[in-house]
Length: 217
Image 1 (cartoon, one colour):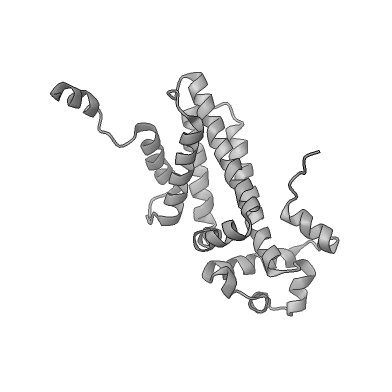
Image 2 (tube, rainbow, N blue to C red):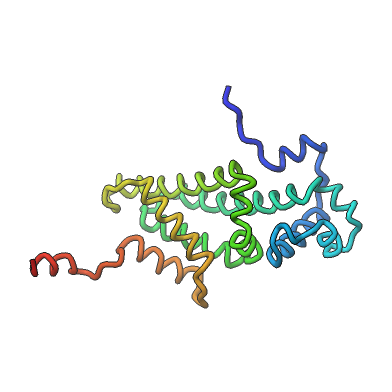
């Protein structure tokens, strides 16, 4: 039987028993996310996190048995939240172009509202991929499959031209991440999504360019 992927929470639960719930744990997660957004993973210590929360370091270990598990739980909660939002959106009956535009808007809105996590990703993604490849690959593939599903719907309904959906999904994935990490703008999430959607749907050639070029040859 194939092994199923255990979440970070499940792994931690198996290792140390029942995870305490409540406000204190969420306070630790928020404080740690703030610190990880300000400094690299390796520069943040459990002492720093305890000081930020205002508790003894031993209290942190009642909830998380290592800095690594705390870091990964922050990321897993984030990924699970945004992917659940996107999957609810794609389950609706909208035409594929509208569905894709809405998904792009939700992604940019989510990360603009969660800048600490965006800063963590932009600074420490290499660490995540190198040290936790299976973890990051799971979430990367989940997002790419979501894009592929929208593309396939569009092809089937005639709103998107036939294409290599795997390659196109990878291009969209890379484009969205580059905009998230490197595009500095005062525009709203909806406006950024509109620009990105326009680039995906229309490309960079001016209308009529190909016909004009053919006429000159």
